[in-house]
Image (spheres, rainbow, N blue to C red):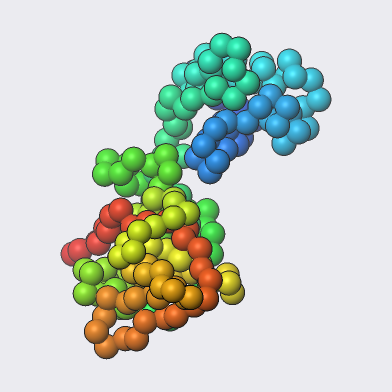
Length: 203
C-alpha cells in the first residue's frame, strides 16, 4: 500500500505554481494574473489555473482577494523553499560578476525576506566596515541609494561589487573600506541593493 501524502500536501505541480507566484511577488511586488500563470504552465483553461489556486489556498499556502486579479498573498512556505535566495558571490576587491545560484540560505529568524537576498563576499576591500572575505551579506533590493550607503553596484560591463556609493559630478565613486585600496570610478553604474546585514560563521 502506498502511503497517503495527506490532503494538505501540495502536489509537485502546485509547488511549481506556488514558486512562480512567490517569485513574481518578491521580484516585481505583486502576483501574477490567471492568464500569466496559464501561459507559464501551458494551462489553456482559466478554470484550470483557478483550480490550482483554490488548492493552494485550501492548503494554506496563499490567500486571494476577492475581485482583484493580482491580489494573491503568501501565507506560508514549504520547508524546502524557506530561507533567502543565494544570489551568488560579490567581490569586495576587484570587480567580479555576481552569478545567480539555486542554493537557499536560511536566515529567516533574522531578516524579513520578501525583498532580500544573500551574497557571499570575496575579497577584503570592505574589512574596515567589518565585512570580511567569506562573510554573508544580506541585501535589500533597491535601485537607488544615498551617498555613503554600502551597496551592491553593477557597472556597464555587468560586473557587480560591494562598495560605498558616492555619486559625483560626472562619475560614480565606488569606495572600498580598506585604506590600502583605491576607489573605483565609473561613468555609469546601477544599484542592485543596499546592505542591511552581515552574517559571519565562526568556530
